[in-house]
Amino acid sequence: MINYGKVEKMKDEKMKIEERMQNMKKFYTKAGELIDKLPDAIPVKTREKLKDVILGDKELKKLMEGIETHRPPRIFLIGRTGVGKSSLINALCGTYVAGVSDTRSCTSETQVYKCMDGDRTLMEICDTRGIAESESINSEISAEAMLISQINEFSPDVAILMLNCTHRDDVTRDVEFLKTLAKSYQETNSLRLPIVVVINKSDEMAPSRFKEPSTYPQSKVDKIQEVVSYYKGIIVRSGLKIDDIIAVSSLIDWQTPDGLEISVEDIENLPKKDIENLQIAFDGRYRIEELLDILEEAIQDFEAQMGLRMAARLTEVVRRLAKHLNTVFSGIAATVALTPIPVSDIYVLLILQAVLVTLIASLSGRDISLDTAKEFIFSMGGVAGLGYTFKLIAQQATKFLNGVWPGAGSAISSGIAAVGTSAIGKAAIGYYIEGKGLEEAKKVFDSEKNKK
Ligand SMILES: Nc1nc2c(ncn2[C@@H]2O[C@H](COP(=O)(O)OP(=O)(O)OP(=O)(O)O)[C@@H](O)[C@H]2O)c(=O)[nH]1
Ligand SMILES: [Mg+2]
Image 1 (cartoon, rainbow, N blue to C red):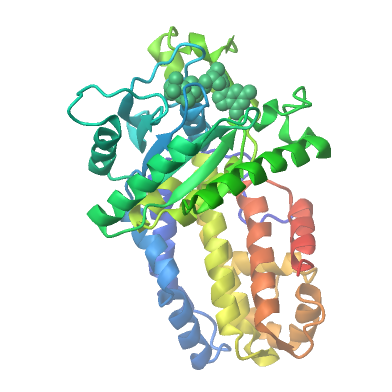
Image 2 (cartoon, helix red, strand yellow):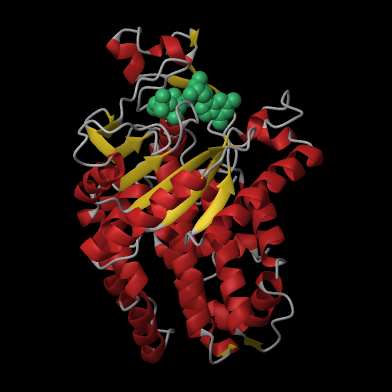
């Protein structure tokens, strides 16, 4: 069985996120050197071009710098008691980080707290029931003005308005409040406050017995979408500028490491050690991954954006970073191929992809060489065969082209380069990060490359 640098069992499951990031960065820093060391058959011009596109890419550079400079994102949450604000934070992080209340409310008026996982601060949250439920403490100053000054002091990277999927609340006051807040935020920070609307508890939409997102019947999905349209209409007509609106479920059932399933309202009674080590007994999260993408896009500060990526569990962080790498490299490949790449210049694309595969592997905690990465790519195109050296590629170019990018003909266009690179990246994520077998990774590749 060919092994492209994969270890049988993830021996380094516990390897710290920071360590893996450093691992990846080390490789990136070395990339120039590695390209210089490529076989002589590769023209100098090609090498220089590669170094230019990889080391000169702004997005990639920012990603690597972000490893050093990330900070926890600050999120302002507004939504009525019990809508699931605390649960949403847990769902975003994939770990139990904040107190969840059932009928009692455990978050007082407005609270600022840090979400911790061990000694890592994942996020900073400012949590309020919103204007609909707040009372003025000091009669001299209105509740609204007080809230706004508190929120401005907190200086959020993004605001999330949370609504309930199963009842259509009157959102006028919260929307008006957000309009005022956005205006004052703009004046204070000279920046627009990104606002995302999250409609929670999608799982409770009828038929509510379907809790597992992959089993939601179409009728349920349609009803959820109706609620989204309903709220979207109201909000847009009110004149509040939002970044996006999405329906999710934050549903997670928790259990202690010894297998005791525990309801959310009892969690706080557990010994501290159990709370810190809670595991997911049932994962009913719906479209949380998409919400993370939306938040990532909405947050303008790069360090906070990076912090959001790193707020999840190790496996999720790694997957999200790999996904981002993939996007960046597909972009680079598309740029490189703006002038269609002739067969003789196929190296550029191949090596670019080999660098991507190597970075993805390094994120998974493995060190593989560019050669190993290249073999992995060949095996995807069905040109498998150890022993293909870079020298031989030129002779095999047509075969390689047809295997990897059918219809590429004698030159590769921008679109094909991007899709092909993204397909390779996704296959590598499947193989190195998700632990899929080679056959399965190849299936991922085949279905991705045929996407338009
Ligand atoms: N079925 C389902 N239950 C949810 C979901 N999100 C939260 N809940 C439940 O709703 C209840 C309230 O959730 P919380 O996260 O405490 O709500 P909150 O908005 O933080 O409430 P306050 O802190 O009191 O303002 C808890 O019992 C949660 O388990 C969801 O998406 N689906
Ligand atoms: Mg709460």
